[in-house]
Image 1 (cartoon, rainbow, N blue to C red):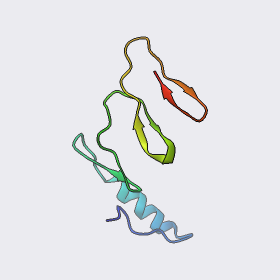
Image 2: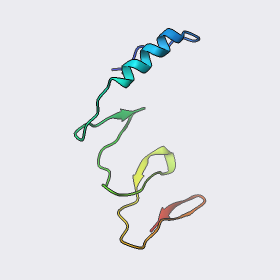
Image 3: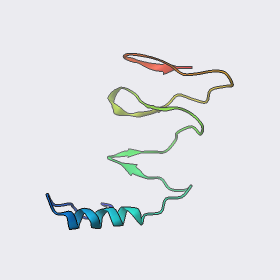
Amino acid sequence: MALTSSIKDKDWVSVRQAAAKLGSIKLGPTSSPTFAGISLTGLTTDSLIYSASGGTLTSLGVATNGKIPIGSTGAAPVL
C-alpha cells in the first residue's frame, strides 16, 4: 500500500498533495515503518546503525563509556 498517490512529472499539484499527505502521517513508539522493503525492526536501542554490504541495515551495538566506533574503508566499523 502506497503512502501517497503517484506523482506525475512536472505536476506540482500532485507534489503538494503527496507532501501534505506525508505530513499528516503520525508515527509513534509502536510504529514499524517499512521503507523500500527494509523493515526497521530488531535494531538495538542506543546503538549505531550503519549500512552493511548489500545495503542491509546493521546495528553495531551499544558502546560502553569511552568507546568510539572506528571505521575502515571496505570493512564494518568496530568498537
